[in-house]
Length: 115
Image (cartoon, rainbow, N blue to C red):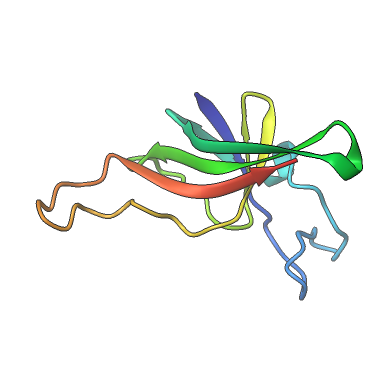
């Protein structure tokens, strides 16, 4: 699966993405587009229907990408996969060489959520 990664070029004191004038911006479009990653995987996905909001589903899980990729998603990024936008919420996990064999990692993983 090909994923598009969006990253804020600047953030305010509260951590919100802003433009060069300090105005809040949405992480979408060419202005925030960092690039694409081919070979992304969605794993360990769980979903919950939010009864208070009606037809809203909260989804959380892991997103994986090839360790050889030039782009690595990080906390605060938005990744769009198959039309669904995910907020990246955690640090990269399982992306280091194997502790016993020293073999390089094939995939890196990070936690993500979406509503």
